[in-house]
Image 1 (cartoon, helix red, strand yellow):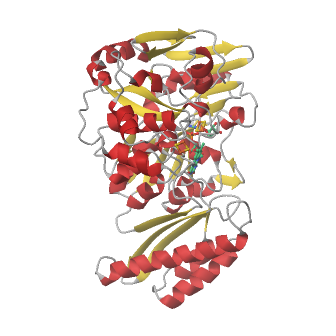
Image 2: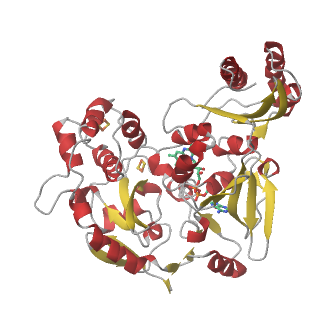
Length: 479
Ligand SMILES: Cc1cc2nc3c(=O)[nH]c(=O)nc-3n(C[C@H](O)[C@H](O)[C@H](O)COP(=O)(O)OP(=O)(O)OC[C@H]3O[C@@H](n4cnc5c(N)ncnc54)[C@H](O)[C@@H]3O)c2cc1C
Ligand code: FES
Ligand code: FES
């Protein structure tokens, strides 16, 4: 079934939006059309969390509550979902929601402007059956900036929720919302608005049909990069295909040789899944943007963006991942190593989309990854490094080292690898390998880091990796 109306659930009703501009942000709609002004605009680029709202999505007959940044969400992507705003948290009887009450009790509302965003992030954590460990609480508000440095009352408020009754009005009303979501969930969207076209197919076959006649399109996944063309550059995007509506592209499979991640799988799901295989991958993803970003952003978007500081990229290159591309006719598979041509340029051609990513699972490798950024949370890397080595009897049998932030593209450290391959791992070899990094990279200075800092940090990260594996050796795990 295809429709040109956006249907979503709001306050126990199905709302229909006709003739929508596909570039309109959800935040704009909320504030100017729904006239709900509790949700604020701070940065308009996903960085401050003032615009945080929660979306309810149907998943296996349950509602999955996700905090997102409404400032970088295009309105049509609301199709088939439930929208929850800060105004909706208060009960019919006028009682504050436990999250709101906790913020009052612990004086968590200070400037007031950022408070609705904090409330909504904490609400989504509360609904996700969090264990309310310090780490869960800090992670849940990593995408909400409090510039008056008042995090402690907010954290105390969040901690106090641990023993609160979770049977709020949303739990009581769950069945009703699930029924409404089922009514509107199974629908593809095609919107023509002035010169703009927007497609949200449900299946790959449908996507390919659209591509047959529309190859000059922008694929939209999480929109955490693409939407900034509208909100920051103030340009229009005239032709969009929304990929995250395609259910066949949302999966993670594993055949013991590799993990395959469907293009539209949100990073937050990969973060949980990959922990058992590559804990350092999860460690990096935990510091990738914020939960609001990772709830929607995808590895495919990270790869297609081809940013030299895209965090997944050095990790995937060092793991020798492959990217599977399709167009309406055929499939092509590339090693990620060969995929990045130049600054923000890849081998993707018009009409070609990323279908999936394959991450090998070799048996005897040691994988480590490190991210260096100015701020711990919600910050872009100055340097990101990934090391994937097989070492037996203290000899390097295979080595793949990749860095982000060191060149125009994420890139392997070829000279450094050459020194290490077939060598015994000693202080001397590591020092030579560190020196070789100067040959591998001539980084630039920019607002994130100077050239000298980058090269020094790159060397230090190799040293850190060495120190960690030496420690493992001493407890007899590695060599
Ligand atoms: C506040 C904030 C914090 C951020 N923090 C980080 C960070 O810590 N680390 C980091 O690496 N990045 C970060 N980013 C950048 C951004 O989140 C990533 O680049 C993200 O991976 C993009 O994924 P997406 O699904 O949102 O892509 P989108 O924005 O939807 O798309 C990005 C590009 O990929 C293309 N594309 C998307 N899907 C496909 C597909 N299936 N096939 C072909 N092309 C496709 C789009 O056309 C577009 O050109 C941050 C962004 C914001 C706004
Ligand atoms: S307004 Fe800052 S994250 Fe949306
Ligand atoms: S409470 Fe709003 S900036 Fe600190």
